[in-house]
Amino acid sequence: ELQINKINQKNMKPVIIIPAYNEATRISEVLEKLMARGHEIIVVDDGSSDNTFDKANEFPINVARHHTNLGQGAALKTGTELAKKLNYDLAIHFDADGQHRLEDLEKMIELLKEKNLDVVLGSRFLGLDSKLPWKKRLIYWFARRFSRKVLQLDFTDPQNGLRALRLDKLSLLDWQKYDFQHCSEILGLIKKNKLNYQEIPIKVNYDEYSQNKKVSPGISMGFKMIIDKLFN
Figure 1 (spheres, rainbow, N blue to C red):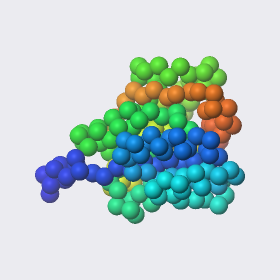
Figure 2: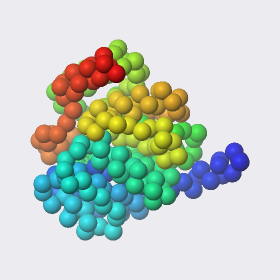
Figure 3: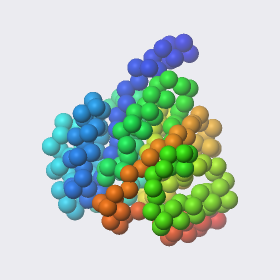
Figure 4: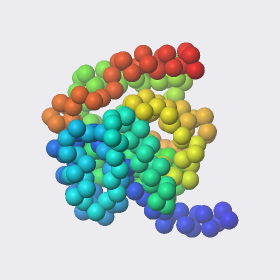
């Protein structure tokens, strides 16, 4: 049985999960690039007030929709659970705003197929320069310190959203946080369930569009996590 699993590993079917909230300006460009490389895609429109849902539906992909804005963690969970129902083997979480690079995504898929890994995590702090704006650099420095000192999670980039996982391990990654806290929650589940993982260096593109978005993790999320840690 173990030998069969090893042989079939290279044939595991991946799908890209894209949570999208008010991304009508950028999502078509992102989907065009992914489809040009032959990737299969699930978009979850997280209650957008613009025409993100209509833009995504112009492509031959699976599109799900939340009628209210629940949060990125909720959108990723909807998409990942749908991927499992549709019999995909691997799920890759990918941003709708063009920040993530295709070459990093494809490296993650390759690693999951070639190595005995359950999860591959991207990290902006392992060598490649993402040219982080100083405000984000300060926030992410705090996030890393908080993750190590308070949450006891020794990962280099606890708030990075680019990750790939095996869907046969999804029951061990049953995150419950609907907002940006899902990032740290997933890392905690990886540690708790002793999943095999690898962090790889990635580069994130910070352009004017992504910088002007208001939806992002901040210091307030750190206080929420402290409360959760103290009372749960």
